[in-house]
Image 1: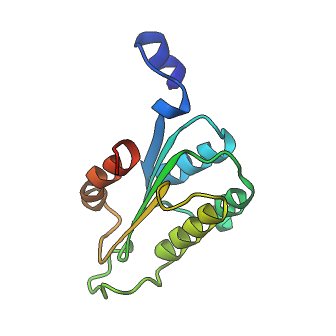
Image 2 (image 1 turned 180 degrees about the vertical axis):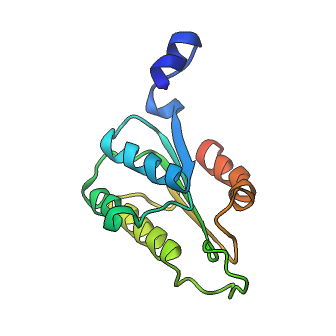
Length: 146
């Protein structure tokens, strides 16, 4: 997509001016792209990613990856499964555990608190409403002075 945009519009293609993001499998694919094309994007937004795919292979790949974006935002809810009842403090779901594992990997790869933001929202589900609610804060962190 980036070459198409650059061919039609004035744009900056360097990592300082580019970002990639997605939700659910889109978040997984954004993470995969950053791992396999390091240095291409300067910002990464990952919402409720399906990190469990293929036995969490992408997390193993992240362990060895270099060249992480300048800023990364991770968002997940404690009720991604959409249970009728939700314990706001419960962080034991697979989705939360996987995102916490990714956060740990990124911290070990050198992403400090000013480069990596994790937002775990109590009882938030795996849906567009939850992603929309986190989006303004994610953009402020990724592109603002926050």
